[in-house]
Image (cartoon, rainbow, N blue to C red; front, side, top):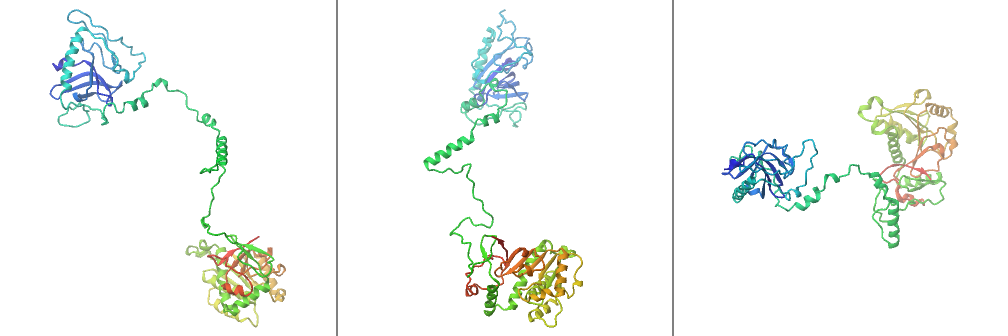
Length: 507
């Protein structure tokens, strides 16, 4: 008897979680208690699978939309033409056995006319009108379905599921696992609006943003904070403090920037990169400081060695540092012309030349010939001769092409008669014509005594009040202890930090 219902168009309600299915009955299996629909529609949308199979356990309501009469199983045509997505839509059925003509379920809809798909909430409330024959058949079908729904284990399956007891064409929609009715309210709130109510125009973001007066809102917030005494976490005019990588954000005590005090008013003051004030001292006080340091053990040889190391470090930085001095640039060895006089300043320059030559720098040392030399110069020349540096005593032996750096150690605070010597004037003319940058070591105070304009100058211990011709002033630490400064009346705190050579800026 199950075959009597083949070809009937039915609507199967599987609850709120699974929805409503419509289609033509293609198979009814009494053994497995399943019913199959061909060309199914799910909630008004055509399914992608050609056939869906249900079990009695998932069917909550079954409606018969059309029962084909004898010989007119194809009278209604294709299921898609009957628009199975609309419950209650059918076609005219054939005459019954008693001669009565069945009633029309609903006026057929033209395929060219637009079709309005009603919402799911309206499907259950639609009734259908059937013929007397269909009424009789419906009662029998209801009893048959009631028998099926009372059976245990009646479930719907999909074609994609593989099981030995399943039909190859059986398809079961995905089930969320929630009970019927739990998600009804949320689904209606999210998907229950009519499609016709969606506006066609795009949302005007710029126009709506222009309606928000940002300045007025912040002004209102600031006014409220001033009245209430509260402070917000961020205001438009508040800028967060920015710190450098070498700055401490936790200040335990105020910073003292003037930590060096000299017994007499300084003619000129400098400051370091960190803001510490470094006053200048007179030549007499500087000479006294070196004399007291030598009395406590900081001999001239130690001071020469320390000055040579600091001056060579500064010169290596000016020559390019590790970018220039590396094994890959052996063919680009820098050339340095070292101009020294027959005095202690010249001995400092010779010590610097020895360290530069040890660091693979081509050094050309100029020193005039004298019958008698200072002991410090003789000792430094003896060490310099053991390096690859070149020593010349004539200006003609100096390079004709520009060198990388000129280190000036010709000028001295004393022995001014040397500036009148022919060799001094010739060397000054060569340095001014070579067009190489000049580094001056411990230059004198009087600018008129400097024959060569320097780009950089290196002061020892404490700077002298140097003029504009000295260029940019640097300060090097020659190892004078703090108590030696105190002995000559200088309240001293080291401004060098972690370095031995620091730049100074004019205040």
